Length: 283
Image 1 (cartoon, one colour):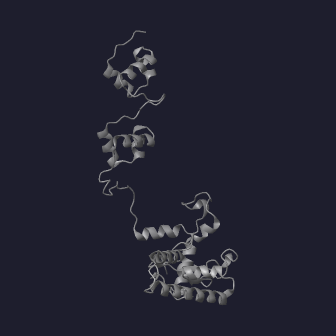
Image 2 (tube, rainbow, N blue to C red; image 1 turned 90 degrees about the vertical axis):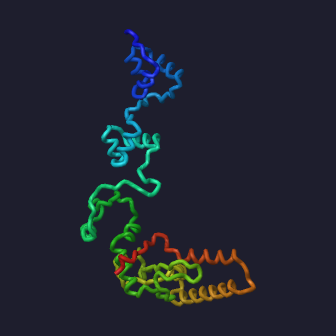
Image 3 (cartoon, rainbow, N blue to C red; image 1 turned 135 degrees about the vertical axis):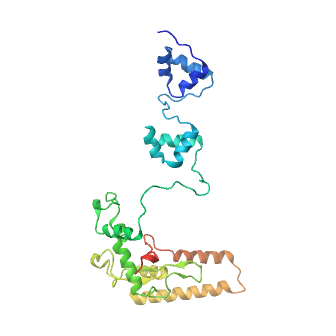
């Protein structure tokens, strides 16, 4: 087989899309000789088997990316989405106005509020594989029930039933704590156990509205109503003594004040796993 002469520039151009093996077969030369020649020319060698098949210019790729997604570009050129992402990163291509929060307008239909409401109603009762959000049954039963529409409706009904006010201390929902300044979000407590009485889980009468602090006391105090009332009274007395101590002119303890405020903020946080009911979903 005769050897075809080739210039250095032409060899570099061929190596952009072909491997040394294919270049050698095309020119009738030893692939190892092609590799050594490219190495002498200062060309960075690719790992074996990694031949670029997606080689658009920067201008072409940038124009495509402003109007198409990476998946659409990949399908158009017959390559993988990761390859498109690597070329975008290599060229430093970003969407226009990216630094100012700009983004590509996503195609799709825009539904009216009435249409969205009807879609939501149509999905009620569709559990398991019938629901479009089905994940294969990976969610625990307790988490699934507490995130259901029935649970949110039960919570909204219970808050409305008890006047959006803690039944122990009387604090109203969304009030600001005098100690730490955080917003108090009321909890809805099951009078009959959620786990032991499944038939009463979503009964608004089986509810008690409590602030986060009273809710913790309710679960921690085993003495019943009298014991809980005593615990709350003791807690309030301790809080009053602490407030008087911190506001006295003889005490200047910024660190102590910060610690008390942090503890109060922690006590006012929603319970782990408790999903807050948005105001627009309340009855």
